[in-house]
Image 1 (cartoon, rainbow, N blue to C red):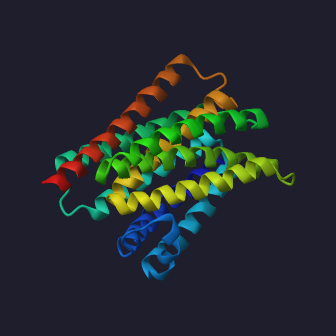
Image 2 (cartoon, one colour):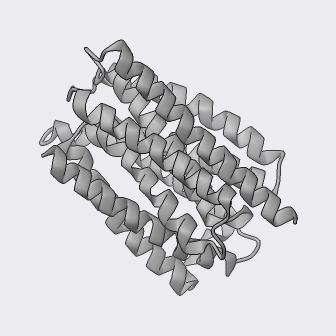
Length: 272
């Protein structure tokens, strides 16, 4: 089942990259985007196509999370980074290549470790509440940063906020799907709120900066948050050796570093 979950997650990453590019194009066709004018997005054919592809992405991710632990599935979202970065690059510079390789390698190593050590566990209401509280705190920091910045930095802050929220979404999806036929209504409601808020952050991020930066920010932060919750709060890392834990930390740092370099690359290109 883990192999099928990994395949679904990889296909979801490809759909996520294509959907992001289409939605970014649609947002750029809708200047002055605000919450009260969100309905204008449906007039863009590109945005609608991107939305439909992202629906397929979500379905694949739900299937993957139903079949394997969060710490195995969530990190594979980062495969969207090299796909979208290479697709949009007019010229693959050394700095861009390094950013993509470092971020992607960090995620691959992370998944390799968790796939061999993660233990499927049941998510309790107490753990879901604790995770929600921590996520809200992190999102508020990103909102403050986005409020007082513009351009690339604003896009990056919004993408990180979306990534934090989507990390919680992954955990709650796992909770809801593994609890069936019993419906965990609190987790389901939290999932909906976190997903919709994260989706809106991404649209605002597209309006402020390049799509590969927004995708990179949320697809790196998302799995790190989801995996951290899964390993530390849910207990998927029970019995994991100290060496494996060190590998997780190093690979996570590499993934974040690659994303920061990618953000710097785009800032320099925009200002040039």
